[in-house]
Image (cartoon, rainbow, N blue to C red; front, side):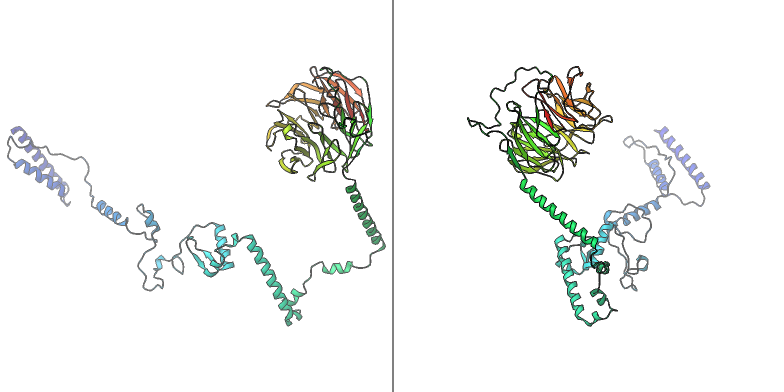
Length: 602
């Protein structure tokens, strides 16, 4: 204990020595109150009697941190605490603390100035009328309110909470601005203004000012169009040449009208050329013969020319056999007629359908052959009854249809697809006569429509040298095939196993595409040798799929082997172009061809 006490005394002496040294060094400085208090505590501890019960004496703690005068800090803290609750001074350029939202948006306060009328001090002003705040407003909204104010005398306050100006007009106009006036209202007002303008003009006309050429009223009344004078000059006696020209024009017009009248009279006629429309059993002439059956499944290439049907006065554009049986052959002529021919018995023309005023471009049978479609360059598509020759319905969009097709599904026989010259494929519902869908993606006139994949999809080709695959009923291209080396494909045919498409390409070859998901070009199969460039020669398959046939530009019909792609035979069929060729569905070695010489050969 005595030792400890001795240590304490030594410490005290040291401290006093240091203290005296400090005083000597820092004369003129104020004594530190904290240090004085600490010294007093130490003295008290030293004087306290030492007893075993009392706590052990504590050693004095020395701080190594420098002394700081914190009075100014405390004052600043108190000042900021006060500032947190008072509004901001708008004349201040810098804020030394983070103001709250309420402080920032609080209204400007300040002592009302005794000499200023509105009580705003000179330092607070930034405008001769007081303090103007900036508001962010979009130019369109500003123009809208500005124009509304100048037209109707009221506008919305920039805060958006109130209106300024003529409040009566505001309620009358239901607070409409110039930009959202209803159109009917605008129209009504325009008419009213015109009417009031006319009345004013009448009133003015009654006034004496109208007589004075110096007034605006006189100008209003005597205002003329810039061309008014010229017309009067032109109106004189017609010269002989002009009279003659006018008469000729009138005659031509009358003739044209007469011709149109005749056309409508001759519209949609049909003539039956057979002996009788029903036989002794009451069967119709379009009924297939009972003994018509396929002899065998193997197809052979024809060797000789059996029969010619001639009746079209101009070229024949397309031929189609009667579905499944092939006992009748339908032909589309450039003489605007469609004819149907007997194949098995007499070989004569059975009926002529006259409804188009220009050449017929395409024909297509319905699935049972009782009806067919024809598309002509007169921009009409007609749906005929094969047996009676009556037109069931006519469709037109004002554009030339290049290809017509019925959906091959039995339950969709009322749906007609037509590829038009204006790059669209139009889908009609023939029951209602309405357009139900438009497939509009091609960049050129549409040439062919071919159904694939159980009639769920169809492939179209066009003058834009591309193939497009569509889902039926959805006008979105599923697959788009366009290569730099591709040419336009004016004819496409489906292989009997429906896995392949043959496309007549205008670079004198027939290309084969797969009909599975990817629609890839089969590079191993290419049929060439014929010259079809520039002509839409039809390509076709034999019913067993072993042969590919096509016409060409020199009147020949070409036969290729499907497997080896070699030319089997060529037959010279027509003078001029051989445009169409069809293999008979039942008779395995018979092929019909048509050409621009007006002949159909068998």
